[in-house]
Length: 283
Image (cartoon, rainbow, N blue to C red):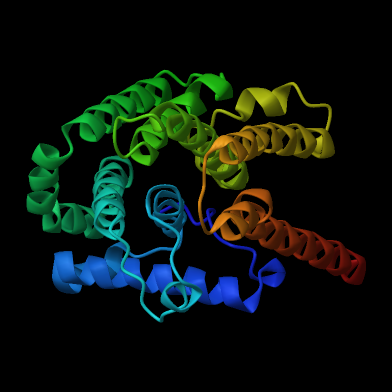
């Protein structure tokens, strides 16, 4: 759904790459088993992190040969598959409301029955998700420019999803999800900033931009905000009693979440260079 919570494959061992891929395939298989042909629409790498995290916390350490199997359907794959559907359902609805995108309306209708069934299955998570989305909509309607306040809403939503059950790990998992959600929201707002300004769309970083002296200052402020969120995620991860997959989880927290950002920044830099070269050629 987000496109940011992924591994940095360049700094991951072949063994851990295979383990990560086995969990991704396990989530893929679970989505297909639960939602048939519709499952592939919901598939992404982001939620693999949560399967690995919950499995690493709650499952006893398994033999490497088991962890390395091609498809690893953890007991948490079903929970994460359901959360994936819930988030995507609301994303489809939002796209329809905001842009009147007919294809998104069709998709939301397609998953409506599944969503209503999950409302009864996960009342705690659904209550927080729906409340958070209403609050976010209110902030957008009123063009609230406090990015910390606005991103907090996404953080609370993801925090409730990360805390799959109310036990001794509930608070810490909520904390990790909170800062991960805030990071994702700020990253998304930052990457969409130029497009949002052109289309006159809401973006809570508008005030940050006004307070910045130049583009470099704006970029630095946004990156500093995101680094602060990920620093809190890292602290939370290290406090959790993780039995397995810690290297993969650390890889995602410390570097994986930045891979898409780095790639996008590289593309922007190349485009800027191309524009400069083109202006030189014209002149």
